[in-house]
Image (cartoon, rainbow, N blue to C red; front, side):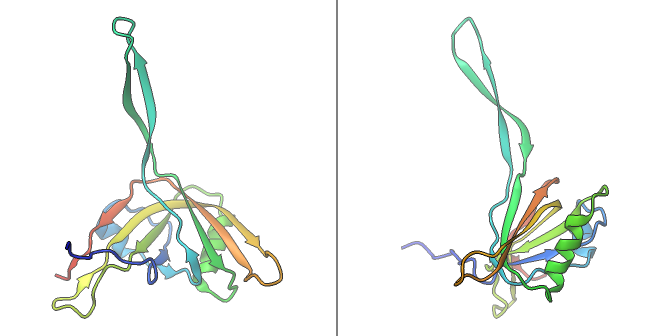
Length: 165
């Protein structure tokens, strides 16, 4: 039987940073992040390429090429907590219409702090604009939530889980 290297999403975190420009691991790590609390669903993120087609008359065959990359939108669902510093930071970023992206850090639950040496979790870094920050009150027996959409504007930097240096 194969080794079980799967993990649940429980324990994953999203840190919301500043607009300090970043492109490298060192630059992203130098930023200050505040954890967004009460996240119920982190959504999905990652590049999707546009489809570019060419059909040659000589052979009648469609050839497909990768076009531009789009990292898409990351839609979070959070339990509305007006006292949460991370949710407040996201709300301020939503109102910000100026240039520049906010840095985001997503940390998965695949590390092992008790290992020797400790295994650091997989971490993703990227730049976003907060495009949506709506309230979803729902019905009587629902927790009031916020739906937050972050438009990803940069490459996604993935740091794979590995033993601490």
